[in-house]
Length: 252
Image (cartoon, rainbow, N blue to C red; front, side, top):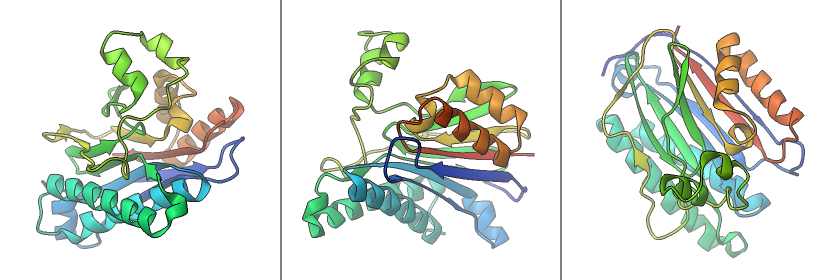
């Protein structure tokens, strides 16, 4: 994979209107060495913690830091393997932290990470934070929500409209720190990207309050910094019941 184009990027994380603290985390890593940039690309991550105030906050922080550190340290590994190892290491570290701090037992987090190259991307994902690709004025959700309601929709038990008001819509079926092993969803092959494309990573504090088309229109109408500000403000105007985190990347 090759790569040394300049991209525009911004991120914003907000506590929202009803929470006392922010359990979301986000991160971005870009190697300074041109050879490393060509082989590893750029890495963007978001995570939405769970398990109480401190537990969720620590879980999301550990996930973002561990995935970034693992990916950056594996210069000789292919990007897909490095992403997978990062998620597995994060899962283990979160569980170890919970064992050392019994009061945080049950802590966990979603995590979505994307490795971006000039002409393609790879991603790894667990939970219900999302990665969207905006291409040719269309928005596509690349990740699949690992949630109880998403499973019901895919099984044909309920409709998409019913899912939006289902009482179990926030119940996750997979997360880092939960269960014996964490097997993230991972892109089996690179996904093409082109000049003018945009990527949006966001937690459910954002996407659960707006339609995909609203995200599309807002991102297309603004540069990444303004788009993040506008999206977070829209979520807060609609009550902001959860923490809100968004990261936007634009390939000029």
